[in-house]
Image: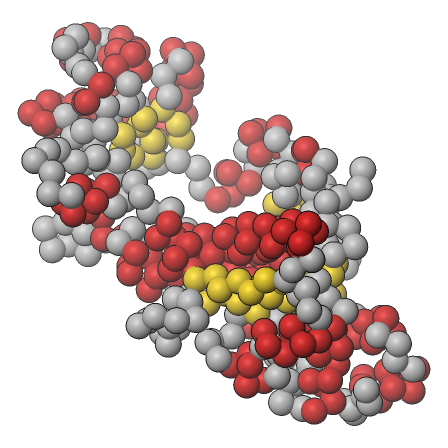
Length: 401
């Protein structure tokens, strides 16, 4: 089956997570991705631990199947190669700080002069404009600035560190959507596009649930109640178990709460007057007894015993899995979410399959992450470079245009 982005060529100057995840997803949809890296060091994520056969698991997880060429953009010859690649591309992705791409000679104005219908995507922490545009866009800083982490900051106690790179992946997803939308419009109008993708904007646009209380305050509501899905609702929380593990309790609806109460022999806790308003509340005066009952029950039983009973009763209490348990879970296996990729002669290292693979819109597998500059000869040959020029480049010489 033909993939939707076959014949689309992407030149990727981005590093670390948002840009590489975006272009990895587009590669799965059929695009060719040429990764431009700094000589000698390459993408900083190449050096992240853990490693398998000296290859970063992190790096390979967002760069599989790409082609790598190392270019020093401050070098006239290397810059000429970069510009020739842009000239032959459909999409350019970069994640430099605002203004730097232009200074290096690969900004949007230059790209548009080389290819009038280019789709050019800049990914930064806070966008190209605005009062925070100059600030480094690290995920933690952005999660804090959007208010997402502030939801859990109560009574002067700082929130816990996030365990998911929400801002990075939000920016990557919006970049994907933007690039696909721009390509679709180009198909009908012939117009290119400049995409100013801000990780802050992207995550903020997904924070409508976290900001419900703030929106209500801004509207000067008389309703004192607030949505509670951050641990204040005892029926939507995480509890420790007898064996030192944990379970997630998601008993929002009255029928689910009734099922749990029946299962543990506590029908006295069923409130027949419970309304739809109570679903995402903190349950007021009942909160303490609800929380104690659930906690006492969980601490009296092992995690897996709780899960076995609740699954049999149809009650949605689920295990909190470790990363290793999740990787080897029956659900991951059953959904076909892992595709093993061999690292040389080592045991196979899995990577996560694109979730659209089951629809035929994405490839079910991808190649290994590229070695730094490993595809330079083939990339240069595609540009029409001669054998002696390629040899000169590989020997750190310049290539003529």
